[in-house]
Length: 350
Image (cartoon, rainbow, N blue to C red; front, side, top):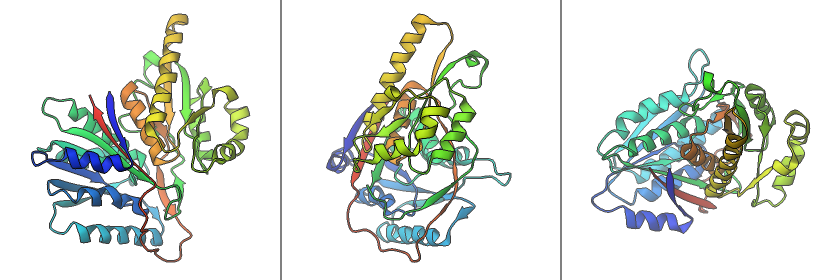
């Protein structure tokens, strides 16, 4: 898998040149509580040949104030999309028996729309959860490899400081993202030497600890954000994860990975280089297979980099789904007038 990436103002320039009268696009997005979710749908609304499918992620534990903020975003969007082909579809994240069904439900909802006569599918990852976004992107990418299939694109917008701060409630149940298990848990890899690459993030200590116990990897190479808009963020994360890094995970500090906080291509290329070098070394020295497993837990932009690496190398991804969000907000804030700090567009090429 190859890709063509654009960032910042290049994104708008790309779509201006790319979307001509012969193309028919479908934008698949979500309306979260941070207003970065509005950027790309509003930008694409300038083109009459773009349809919109919004996945409404239904979680059992979301505070009322956050629901009101999401409604504000929806109203702002619909005011611009009057008369356009806009569809909203609910996606249950957790089933009645508490099983995580996010990826399967999202893929099922998108199957009918993606299969229509579109030339391009654009998945907006700005506010979409990983359990929903990753399977939808892979679904679009796999269809793009078929004869006459639509091109697959990913877009993501981000801010250094989110407009709405929220705390997530984890499912406490590590599992593979739907469609990203590769050959794990099969007989052929029962003795695989596993390398775990987690994306370190604030307040993810307990979740990543559970994932480590679930995988029991032989090696761990955590990713720290560097460069970062906050130059001290990497040091602060090292302090927060000091105990597991030095004891539970037994990480050699020389194996800590530094990848650009707001550049998914840097994350992807770093993982690619590590995985291929390791695979070549193990193939020449031992008979047991080597596997690299990813765990996104930080920013959406960094997570997109992990997604790109997984699609390129067929790497498994383990995560914990968020079943709810809470916030200390007491009232619905005004929409931000400033544009997102970071914009990325990635065109996936089979």
